[in-house]
Image (tube, rainbow, N blue to C red; front, side):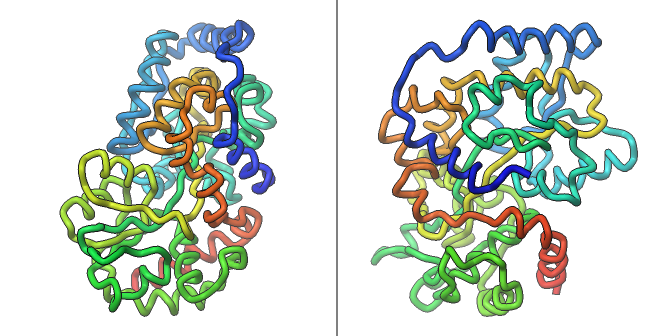
Length: 372
């Protein structure tokens, strides 16, 4: 398993990268993707089936990455919109166990794809030597062996400014303070309960650096205090956004990019970086992928598109792990990324090693609590 600190250190460098050469796609890199494309077509693999998220995230991925891949390579990208990450993971597991895999590339959290319980459903990419662009253009830690690192986001408090004209929330303690900040809340239930449990512990006075190992009993006890005020447990970013648009809730935990999108729509939603959870996506190839070589060509291609990565960051404030993205970003956009120094210092990082050993137990405790 890739050392998490190494991965995070590499991700942080995105915000600090200064402009260097604008020549970002070498002939050697182009040839590596071309070779994979040729091998895929020789094997009769003229399409690749990809789970691509939902809403504005889906739209941006399609326009900036997947449609250009099809245009440049001739390999059709078939995008499957299948809800949140927990639904995707469940379907990957079910198709794999039924020996009826339909998807080639899927997106999930980096914590999920590296978990022992999920490893049998994902192709082992090893050191990514067959994906040379990942090694040459990816930041340190981009190769996760079972997947490649993708978008890094902050998962924190989003609140409706109009609900609190005298000043909004600044911490998880505020999120729990229903007297000072009245109104219904929402929290996620998409397969990574450690984010919510971590928030509960911080609200209860635990320092962010001391959140792990998770004290699940203490976290659930703190959640008991707030439970009556949680009007929705959302399972996708689209759902979280809609809850804020319609003012069904005054605050929720959600990704910073979803808040950026809402603000562009004109909604007065603020995001709190203090105590936000680092949530890094990963792209993996399914075990038994029907178009495995085409899938490898796609992953390799994605790491040779820093201009697209920069545009993605401008639209959604998510950081893509390409070394050269900084060449195409201005300081204002970089400051809104989770990897910006002023944000990075406030972000809570998960302990991947602890989660690898305790993940299933945590999920079982969470499932029992949420259903109780």
